[in-house]
Amino acid sequence: MNSDRPYRGRVAPSPTGYLHLGHARTFWIAQERARASAGTLVLRDEDLDCARSTPHFAAALLEDLNWLGLEWQEGPDCGGPFGPYHQSERITLYREARDRLHQAGAIYPCTCSRKDLQAIARAPHAGDDDEPIYPGTCRLNPKPEIRNPKSSWRFRVPDGETVSFTDGHYGPQSFVAGRDFGDFVVWRHDDVPAYQLAVVVDDAAMRITEVVRGADLLRSTARQLLLYRALSLEPPAFFHCPPMTDAQGIRLAKRHDALSLRALRERGDTPDRLRAAWEELPSR
Image (cartoon, rainbow, N blue to C red):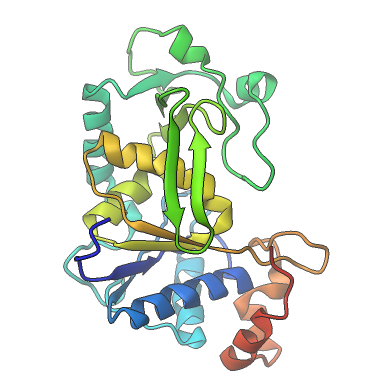
């Protein structure tokens, strides 16, 4: 990352449920790091999951972030020079990136079904809730590149290469392509860009200089660094926050309705009280 660039951070919630305490702490850290650098905070609505993203949750996340006291300078509600700030309105950018990867031979079509992957893929790593390691079925047995409506597109990782970066919180990190993660989906079979590609394209286009997010995405950072290189884009710095857990030690997710910001607000909690309690909750 070029440290001479003005600081630009971002918060990027998905409108697929109510925000919880873990989101709140991560987003607050993102804001404070932007403020400490006299930088800009961008709000991006990651609404590509058409099946679960709803206008109700989109309105709720704006309301909850405002209640929490977050202040952003660019976003879907206030505009800015790098919009649109809804991912659903940025599909053309993602298609252009996918086509560049295709032309470079960096991706290949995959016709494996979810049932196929469950039967043959190695299990995902503990704490990593994204796709399992792909065994290379369609890479090893390439099919003619026909526009199969059931095909996804996978990025061909450089097997054996170590991808290293220094995280702002956890320090030096290294992952080996082909061992710690395999060929990953960049374009889904339902003709929607996958998370890995969309965030790389958006963070580069919006000139984000530091990505603040949860530690469950450390491994995704290695994948995304490969995409930055393949697309000849400059990567940002990364700061991964320790996850928050519930009383049973389970990492918070949107299924934890009792710990959603909406539920906490309704029972009388205040942003100041929540921030004071964050240090007392178990994290690891």
